[in-house]
Length: 322
Image (cartoon, rainbow, N blue to C red; front, side):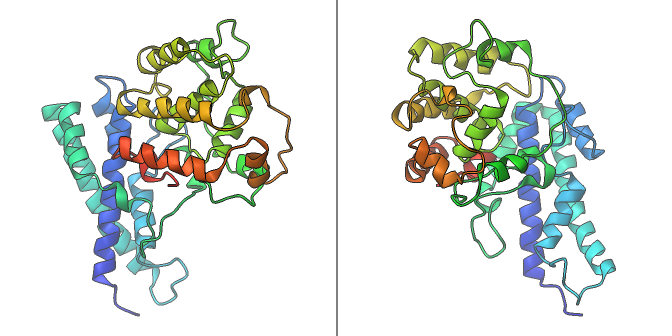
């Protein structure tokens, strides 16, 4: 049996710790005030967070993924006990990071913990293979927070990508969201679309399902509307930040993605994309879809390059196809 490459194990462990820090930060950002300790303790116990299908890998799953960066599953030269030992060492490092974060949270509060995490965040390594290649898309392995289609999919059908969407436990769309984003609402804002069409637009734009992605997609459909008014953007921006409950709330610097989405929607593609549901076949490729709606990959990549510079140290920016 070949000896384990210590440098590779160290790199994989650092990758796992970087992911754990980022996941903790994302959980803190999406947790109601005063519930932060309880929510992170759920992660210690590897329970579901926010009463929805888990968004991110548990610490144990994360350690297993990290070990896979050292030892491919089909490596016949390493027995199962060695793999288990490797996973345990990485899991111990991840658990230590999580427990240290909870201790800081209890003693100093969520703001101090967020500041510490942001100081040590390493988003540049999260979406890289061990050899350094950028991972532009992911099926999420059933985790909705990890799913993102990217733009390197021009020969894939829309239906294939729709079928890859992770199953999410039904949480219901709160009335605060329905008022502005349900096209059947009497006060729906410009760009309101059905959930099915909204999912297709996520794929068309190459975006995942996290807050920053959501803000960009909603902004794009609003800005692309022929009835768009500046005051509509102000209304929805305020709703995102103040009246939407978790996990639909978007606040802080991630709201800049909404502004960029407005700008991109106004300057790109066929107008009123929100009204074009059902006008094109789901069996068509993404290249055909984007050509049909006048949306180019180069234009999107240029917008996302700006977004990644404006909004730093987030999962969404780290995985943007620039």
